[in-house]
Length: 127
Image 1: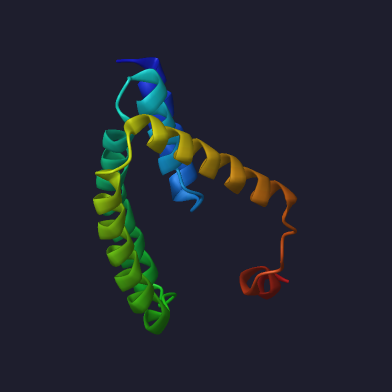
Image 2: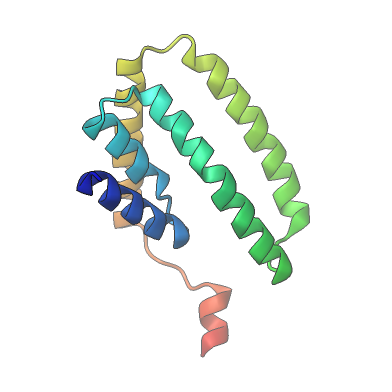
């Protein structure tokens, strides 16, 4: 077994389990270390997300921690955005898609680095 693949999968799973978007790790690994095209890497990431998302949905639904009135409209918009994104990829080359994704990751990292953390209800309840 390839140790790089093992570490990428493990790291991606740990980060994803913490709710921080482990898919970015998976996409970077697939694109850089396996020469998988960007679009295919993102498709593989979406396939990995389905069972993880369903498992999280079931767990949080049993805990009654889902606000369905918020989730359902957002899910609908997410599906619409997904299909629009699929249509858009027909017109964007793999090189441009990789560059756009890289810029997106850098912007998200900068936002996380420079944004102040706010108190959450969960943290207030622990006191």
